[in-house]
Each structure stands twice: as C-alpha cells, then as structure tokens.
Image (tube, rainbow, N blue to C red; front, top):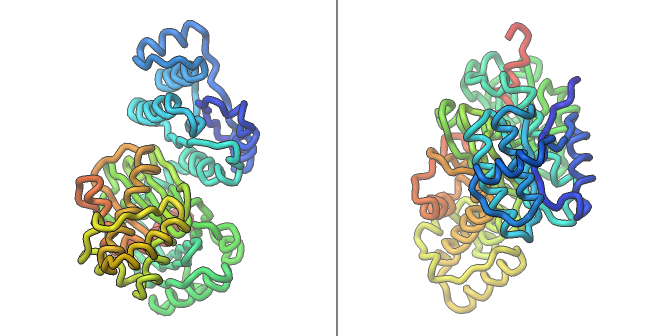
Length: 411
C-alpha cells in the first residue's frame, strides 16, 4: 500500500527529542513524514506575504513551507503542525497556519503543542486520522447507511453498540468499560436484542475507540477506525448537517476532541487535555461528591450559579479539593455543580477550541452531551446555541455503523 505523505511544519521537534516519536507514530499507520523543500528566496517572500514578523528562523521556514503547500509547489496528503508548548511566538504561528492551510487548500491539518515527554503513542490517533482522511475520503463522504450494520465504540469509560438498518437506528447497547471484550459483548447483545436480530444478520461491522483493534479482531470487523473521523461523521449525520461547515465537540472520559468539519470530513482537529480535570471523569467525581447520579448533575447545575464558587479543575486533585472547600464553606450543591460544568467547559474552550475554527452549528456529542449544565456552559462561552442531536451518546457507534455499510458486498 502506498504510504500517505504528511508534510511536517514544526519548530523545536528535532531539538527536544520529539522528532523520533513523530516518525514512529507516522510509520505505525503507514504514513511518512517529510519536510517540504523550499529555497531561501521562498522564505523571504513567504514571510513578507504572510505578514508575521517573527524572529525565529524555524518559524519563518514553517510559514514558507505552508505557502508552498497552499500554492501547490509541494504535494502532500495531510499536514502536521507542531510547536513547543513553551513558546508564545510559535503558538501564534501554529494557530495562523492551521487556519490558513484548510482555508486555502483541501489539505487536512492536525496541530499539536508538544513537550519533551510527547510520545509516539500520544500522536498515534492524530496521525491515524490524517491517513484515514487521505485514504478514505470517498468513504467519509457517505451520507446514508444501507443494509444491516453494527458499530461498536469501545471507549475509556463506556462501551456502546448500535445496530442500523436502512438508515435507521434499530438497536442500542451501553455498558461501562471494565473488561474490554466482555463489555463489548454485553453492549452488542443488548443492541441485537433491541433490534430483534441475530449476529448472523449483520452484514458489516465497524469499531472505534480505545479498544477498537481488540474488539475489531474479536468481532471480525470490516472497519476499524480511529474516533476523530468516525465521530465527525457520526455527529453531522445525527445532526442532519452533512453539507457545509460545522464544529464537533466531544468531551470524553479521558480526553477531549474538537473537530472542524467540512462536508462531513475533518478539516482541522485536535484532541487531548492537560488533566482529567477537564474531562467527563471530573464531572463523574463531582456527581459522586454531591451524592447524585451523573444523570442528575446537569439538571442540578441548571439551578445553580457557577460564578458563586471558585473552581480549579486544571488538575483533578485540585478540582476535588475545590469541591470539598466550596461545600465546607456553605456553597449549595447546585452552585457547585454549575461551577464544575463551567470549569470543564472553560478548559475545553482554552485548550482545544483555540486550535480549531469555530463555525456554526456547534455540535456536542458523547455521554457528557447529556449533561445539560455542561452544554449550557459551553454555549455561554461560545455565545451560540449548542446542538445536541438525538442519540448523541452513541456517536462513535453510529459513525462506525454508517461507514461500515460501505463494506457491504455490492455497495
């Protein structure tokens, strides 16, 4: 299979020991990373044209390479933009380039702020998504599910399964992720029972999520695909917005994803988070501390005033300490719930949403999208109405089932 060519625009990766990890991540998904060749005169012209008066020679080189890609002087299948998280000037350049390239070309972009501890494993899903977009653009353009297919999303917190038939969801299953295969089997069994179908009725299976490879092998899946592209497709499908621009936000149990989507295909995307304090895990801990079920946290937060409670959830330990201190000081459970929701939304806004262009509609998916206090807080920060489509908690499973129908014989 021909390798996907990913153009790297970066500053500092070779000095911090990260470059080897970037190469390794790309190699593991059948891609090759290369640095676009340009002349010195191209650098001077590009910097002048772009209008950013940067001091670093490496950053000037990044700008020139970006311009060469946009002008078609260098061919690539995708673009990886990475800079050191410590450099403010590099952050500005990274932010401008990740916006400039998709707006002026059809190249998909992933941007990343790396540290000396960044590993190939950290970069794997991002590289996999870039290669998926390059290799499966026609599949990602699919707008309707056909036949009888099943999607399984093996996430860090929960495992979801969906059975679809002729473009409709006919069965769902949802179980906590404990033993990966056992949880998947339970979710699949429930989805099939609701659909009134047997395993042999399924014509194609798709898997995604952290356990996608293990579950995919176990189920004999036709499609095993990372969650960035799958969730993008599932989100716009459920929201009925497969044409045009959209922004997808998925706040998960371990990490968060922000994806700028054009016609159902990711344009720019990012994932991660500083700590679990910015994830659904923190909200689970908040609910437990308040003595309510996680399903009750959203309505409780809607009754409170988050600004009344100082909240630090940059670290899950300090966030928990903030909860304890607030309750000990007499804050109401409703105010604490609202503060927790606002804190998580604020972190996603600061960490992930600065890396993508926010274009309406903003679609929120995943299990946390059912927490209305969190959805409200995100809408307040973005100053827009956030769309939560039906079955949003099954986003990865739906996307997998939809795309898997492309593997049915005769399709």
